[in-house]
Image: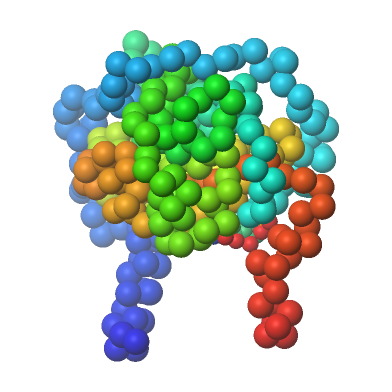
Length: 275
Ligand SMILES: Cc1cc2nc3c(=O)[nH]c(=O)nc-3n(C[C@H](O)[C@H](O)[C@H](O)COP(=O)(O)O)c2cc1C
């Protein structure tokens, strides 16, 4: 264990970081936007020449339409039945989390299906696909401007890579697809400078919640995961770990009505320890 005084100091630093938006000793800080420095690109350029259009005929999707039910039934699912996810379902999940509806100004900001502080939308979406109809398994990158996906590369021993990427959370290796969201810091820092990092954590919550709600509507199971091996994930998708790094992940799989018992086993320790 670390020195208790050091632990206390680290916790205080964490709290101070979160408080930094409301009260700061750096009132004179000027963001690069204020300094009229050029704006970074709204999205990452394609990484390959292997982009393909995703289907957009969402009216053909079977989906619950009772919003009360969708919200009430949202939950984390870690038990999957390992049936294929359709390409249209995946397309909708990408749309619901990062889809671009409009551009503000000539190229000032993207307007998406999720909100974002200052409309900076500083995320990129990567996938490890295991079982999606019509897609070879492997690593992918979402191109939101054209609602396209690009195939990056196959991944050796995909179930092991998924489990390792999530610090050995092996239940995720049965998911049909795993979302990995990266953060491109300068996209947010250009406008918000030292405050960008607090805003982006709030943005990430909105995005992941839309995936949860999309899955609830589609009858699929999702589980947000923050316990991931950042360097490992960055390596899979070729991110440099400085100008872009993994921030959040979320496995998605097919679920059955009677998985509740197995799902409960993840929290057996609560009963065992009388919590
Ligand atoms: C930011 C965040 C990080 C999470 N990380 C993990 C994780 O690493 N592993 C996991 O099994 N569940 C993880 N979860 C899921 C939570 O455990 C789950 O939301 C919580 O137990 C409440 O259950 P519910 O989502 O079914 O309401 C995470 C959820 C959030 C929002």
